[in-house]
Image (cartoon, rainbow, N blue to C red; front, side, top):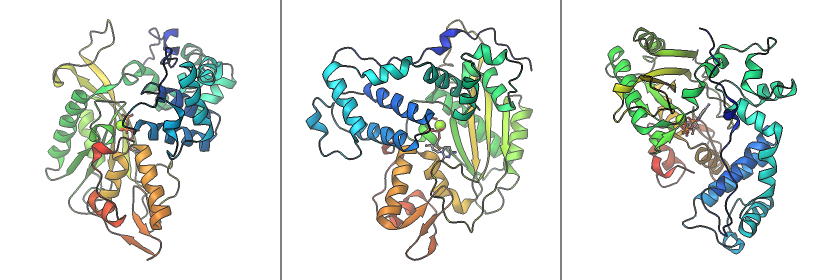
Length: 371
Ligand code: DCP
Ligand code: MG
């Protein structure tokens, strides 16, 4: 497939504005300021600081009302001195100078732009930046740069997949995936996960879990589903990863590590007439379809509950729950399993409710997990 880059413009450099007009309380848009700081720390490989900013943003987000004075943040957990300083500046000046400085920084701008491409992580972005590359055009015109298959797809469908996915589009995809999976195996179990399961109106992709009522029958199912999507002519990109799941392993303490279940990362074509209310469009775009990123993950049924909890997220919620389990309950859990270190045994879970019961917590509904 030929890579058409004619539509790449410098306007893609534009980030979301963070400077706020002179105001004297902290509200939703200010979490963008913390997100810029988190991102910048991530680009500087300061994972600790990155997490600290994300956690602080999450605490502020959970407050019932806007913060109008620094005193209002007294006693709140997870607000470190850097966050306090940012809040203080916003309260005083209506803006944060450090954040503005970062946003004007050439390296931050380039890394943010490059990592917005599917298949490009901070390491690749840094490599390109160090070569002196600053725009998509420069990357795509640089003969020495060899894009892998995922990055090629990332550029090819950039315009579509960098646009948000609406709830209606996610529902339409659910119908397509459901029909495909059930055509192959009528009793297969399918769940829409990720942000849409948490009730979000918009997302960056659509995530699904697929399994079978009997253990082992899931083997081969995903490849079959992929073939079927291909036959329907709607598969634009597919990366399949076989399972490397090992049931004897203890849950991982590294939250960022990808789970070991069989999965695929797809780009799927969604047609206008499949979506109630139509597709979201870019200005001037009259195509009858758009491309959407879809993840399908296939845990064996006895791991379905932990996988569902992990893939429902949010990242911050699951990260905090795992921390709570480890620190308060001496339990480890990840997408594969829940393990009790005191009893030295795996705890079996059939539903998400079981996990909360084992942790001695009240059940938290998916829509309450938007930390
Ligand atoms: N997740 C995971 N392992 C991965 C990737 C994601 O356990 N390798 C989890 C964390 C997320 C959830 O799955 O909460 C879904 O991942 P997304 O990145 O799709 O995040 P969301 O669906 O929450 O948000 P978005 O609206 O950006 O898609
Ligand atoms: Mg998602």
